[in-house]
Length: 85
Image 1 (cartoon, rainbow, N blue to C red):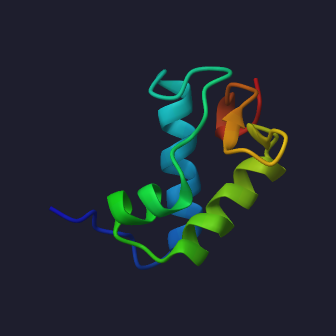
Image 2 (cartoon, rainbow, N blue to C red):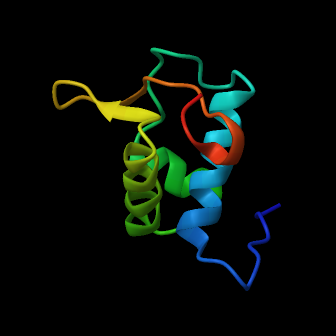
C-alpha cells in the first residue's frame, strides 16, 4: 500500500524526515549506504527528483555524505528535531 503524504508539508521534507527516522532506529546504521535513488523512488512511490531533494536535505543536516562518488552513506545519527546528535 502506498504511503499517504500529508498535504500541508512538502513530500521531499516528509521523505527526509522518514529517512532520518530510519537512520535513528538503526535501519540504516552509521557507515551504511542508503539505497539507490531509483530504489527509494520505487519504495516510496515518488519521483527521483523528490528523492534527490530529500537526500540533499539529509546532507544539509549532515546525516549523510556522498563518499567518493558512490551511494550516500550515513555519517551521523539524528538528534532532536532530526539534527545530528
